[in-house]
Length: 194
Image (cartoon, rainbow, N blue to C red; front, side, top):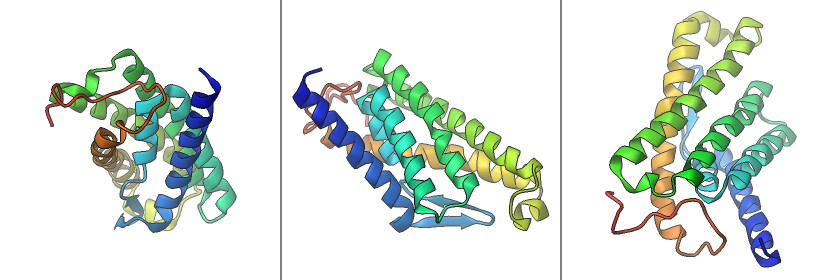
């Protein structure tokens, strides 16, 4: 990679990271006590996945550091953000090896569901650790493990991830035309089914 592309790639990673840190502070939240879902909070990570595995991991890690340094997020939220590294790297590698995967409805849906499932399993694992360590708010315990962790965190994350993935896809379609660095995914108009 030449110097110009390296600088552009670092700039893109930094911008996506900054956006990922800002979204939870300003975007609309849907609250189902004790869980909450911030609209578009995963969009920068999905866009990073469309570009490259390195940018996907960088954005996930830098976002986690940003949440930690902000000091306003509980540690369980920070570690849930860190768990995004797993779905980000798996998804980015899949896209790098299958550049046209998102050009069909079936490919789009399967990829979205796979990354959403990985995303949910990782977040459930983090919350389960805190749940069994008795380190969550009373709302988690009052409503029980199956409801709060499996349903709200697990199934909720799958739905949330699919929504954010869809938003990222539609943002990436026009954005890909101005990104000049080499990327993993280009959505062609003639092949795209959306």
